[in-house]
Length: 248
Image (tube, rainbow, N blue to C red; front, side, top):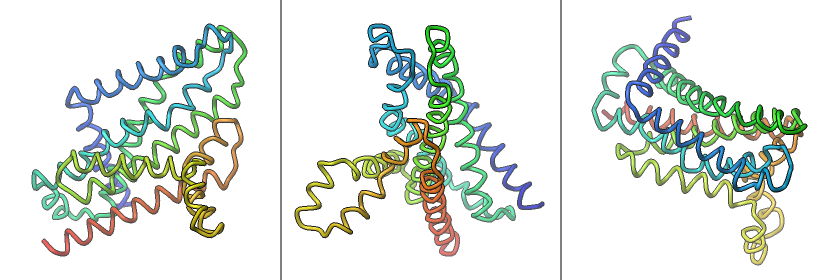
């Protein structure tokens, strides 16, 4: 019970930190504008006469590639730079509780931004007959993708006190997770690597797992992939913080 209360307190603190500055509002506005742009302009929504949001969900991994690391870069880097991380861990708060609280607050913020795109499916529903099941799965995929990118961003933020470095590292890692499954990359690896290694590297990509969800296919192995990515990255964050606290 005490663990839950500490996690909730950290989450509440981080949630307030987002909305105590105009950055959160700017982030959400930019995100919504870009989502509408990809959903209606890039997809040629009206010209094609196809009332669905496939274009939005197709571009979401690339949109998140910049926006999610930007939302995550301050989570630990700012604490380390200002020195409040030492104060945080002297208040009977464990690294696990701090990681869980910060992750839940940041993921909640990203989910709020995603939920605010609700006028887009309503517009598609008004103009036609979109596949509501595929749309719901697309949103589920977007939520899981945001969680995966966020966990990576938290890990890189724990590594450095410089927010810009954290942002760049997170973008590079997330870009790797996107590109590693693309044919040009796998074809290049197959020239010198055995097939089992190529298949193993390709399995690290978020793309096939996310694509299955946005097509309306909910497979437990795809959900498990994203949950594994989150757990692995948060575990890495926890280990980094334990090392920081043990050496201070």
